[in-house]
Length: 381
Ligand SMILES: [Zn+2]
Image 1 (tube, rainbow, N blue to C red):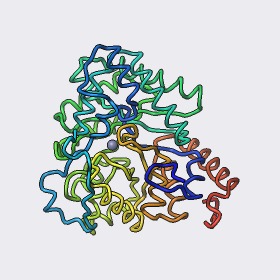
Image 2 (cartoon, protein in one colour):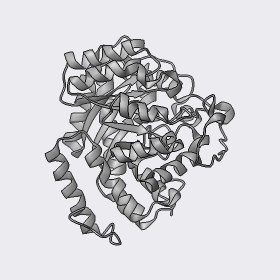
Image 3 (cartoon, rainbow, N blue to C red):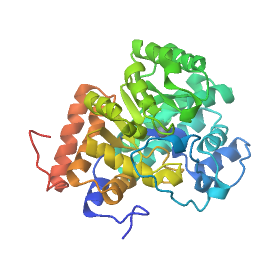
């Protein structure tokens, strides 16, 4: 029987599906369902170039320029994409989606459904979600409080109904200069909200080197905001991972697969213990086998990773499905899956007390369900 699409559901995958989970990397815009996108477009009289479900099925970003010069040590496998000749870039689809959200109620609806789906489809009890602020603020003339307070209202409604807690990360797109990132950090500082806890560089990685944003990161960090960055995901090279680790001094990193190219970069990532959020499913459909092999290698080499669904509505996937893929397709064993399941508690930006409580609860539930019965528990691990 197949519950998760392309994978067969093993007993461990099903048990992990039932267990509570944490997700530290998904994009609010990437959780909007085709139905809700159609509703928002109609409500706000915005025309979109096709049916939402069809557009999502055609998202497929290609290989970046220069990829052939990569030193990647992971075998490259070309995966046929039946929609390659009709492909639409992920970033283009985000532009279309962003244009359809206009007021407080729109943002509240999107955030509520993001949290509801996370809880109902994958039993996520805590999530840290990116908001694509750069585009919303610069391209559509919206105000920061209008966006953020709408999202917070939706998150709070979902927390009341389902118990899931959502915290927000303001996305800083590298498609824009660092001055725009600085404006976002200034807005966050001028409009503090408990639910908005950090920033994260996102967008197409070839558009802007992370070192351009060092002042933005310093300002965020000196004002108590946490920091992450999408890195070593699109650029064929390990350098951005080390820059984000050592120059931007991020609290955690998103993706990071190209770090595997260089032994020193691997050592720095592993020795620092920095947390990476990794997605088995990607808009670069042709890269998928390489992506999955890279995640397997990262685990084997001792990277501290968790799994994420990134843009679950678009690909489509769920966090539960990402766990199933990691176990059944990548071949991670029960002990590795247990480590990955617990890792985002520590990798999250919640308080120490909350982390301790959640870890205790997670372990109690796993023991009650005998999820990892072949895994030895040591010192409450
Ligand atoms: Zn992402």
